[in-house]
Amino acid sequence: MKLEVQIGGKRRAVEVARRDGRLVCTLDGKPIDADAVEVATATYSILLRGQSYEVRVHEAPDGLHINSGGEELVVQVMDPRQRRSQRTARAGGVEAEGRQEIKAPMPGKIVRVLAKAGDAVEAGQGLLVVEAMKMQNEIKAPKTGKVEKVLVAEGQAVNAGETLAVVA
Image (cartoon, rainbow, N blue to C red; front, side, top):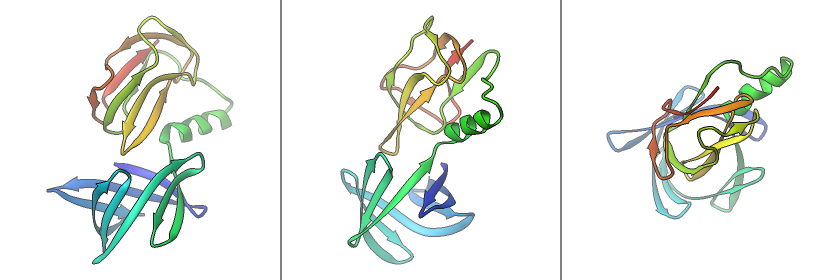
């Protein structure tokens, strides 16, 4: 999974994947030797460059609060859909046009379906909620229109790029 995060005012590119049971990470394109195991809810044991850390993570309105060794770090995960909508707003607020397929931004699980086929929706209105990495992400309508199809149900696992719904 590729993410853009902001740590201490600096944007960083993070990529995390599991391969052969091992955590594979890069930070700004540079590989990081790390391994992580969730030992309790929102508590992880992380082995990083040969050192062991116990890390607690909790969500807050200002981002993810990561606590380890008495220190706290606040990390904002930049939502690629949010960046797209910010670019659109700067370009004059133009909505998407035509039939739009709404795709899963990352692998996860559908925890709520907020709109059903036939519902009229406004641009930016919530359609679905996907849970990924203990975080819930609301998937919003890219345009004002009508929900043509909802292809998923609550509790269903989805893959990144999978079509979730169609708005026409």
